[in-house]
Length: 475
Image 1 (spheres, rainbow, N blue to C red):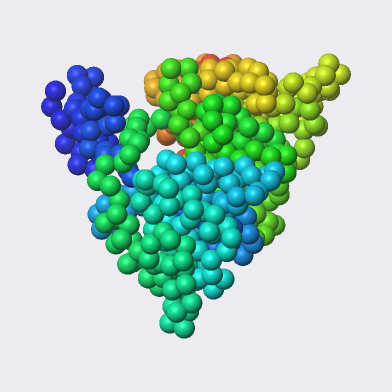
Image 2 (image 1 turned 180 degrees about the vertical axis):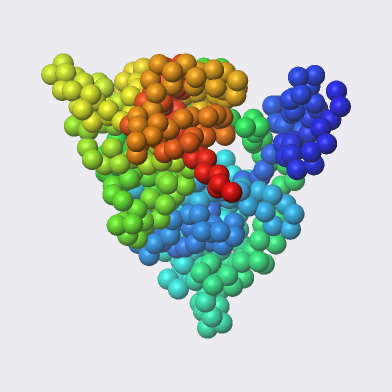
């Protein structure tokens, strides 16, 4: 088949054109698309509040990791794509590692330990203004037995006066301390040069890149069970889970095989309030959650079924609708719902979710795993609707039948006519109606409802825009 001549078309990986006119990516034996080499992983570890997330932001060249002058802001292990000197790699931010941690901090430490076991290179970050602490020495004792390359990073060396103090970190026994200031960028370029020199040419564990799994964002209030659901889906403790509300701060994404397909699930920070009224780390976490929604294709909004539907739940649903993403509402903690609460929940759904009758709904329990497999058909239905495009001929035939049976209401003594309709785009389905006059909001909602009845669109928002034809001036 002749290759299209549109040079602006982005074609992922190496591949070929099929007879149907689609671009098919060629895969290696391990499932990696040709032209996309797996990236080596650099893990950034250390005790709390030594500047790990600040260093990660400096390495990737943008403010992605949440940073605040409070210990313990980062809790999960978060991966970011980075590049230096033409060499791409992944950098993994971790929570503060403490050998004697309990409760939530113990879960955070396990995430850091997992990062150290699976990385190709480990950066141990130490606060040079404090010196080597008992925690730093405990980390060093473990890493001295590791076969993974280790670089000791002495952070917060903001001036030449602190360089002599940093020399004392040789006592940790994991090599020469590399002096940097992550906040000001001092010495970071030299550190990146060393990282590229030390990284192995081939990652220890090949990362299989599937060439475009559908992206799913898990969103909801704090402590509604988003991280528990991600862990249940992955079969691994991918996200830190604790009964303290707001445990997740950064978005955590994982590739999950479900229903014979690979999905990219993104666990997000719980939204407590409006972004404009949040502060500190909560403000930046809210921004990243909003960004995760906008970059997702389907948003799974988790609602605690054991509690009444709250104003914040409705605000989150409205946010998803406004961003135009496909929607699945998952009523979580169903194992805690008794018969009386189920009857009350049905009333709340009829009363509070009247604006979202099109959303897919499932009842699950992330804790027990009950019915989590029902998420797959709900997401597939929502995605299919989100991707749907209706041909112009079929759309206008429907429009003539609908307006003949129910004409638009009179406005200003005149009856507006709908001349023509077309679908401007999908994702979400957006329709433009060319009319001779303005259509009332109630009639636009009527047309949207009829569109759904005729063409489906279950699980996807539908937008109906009006284009009023300008009056021709008389000569």
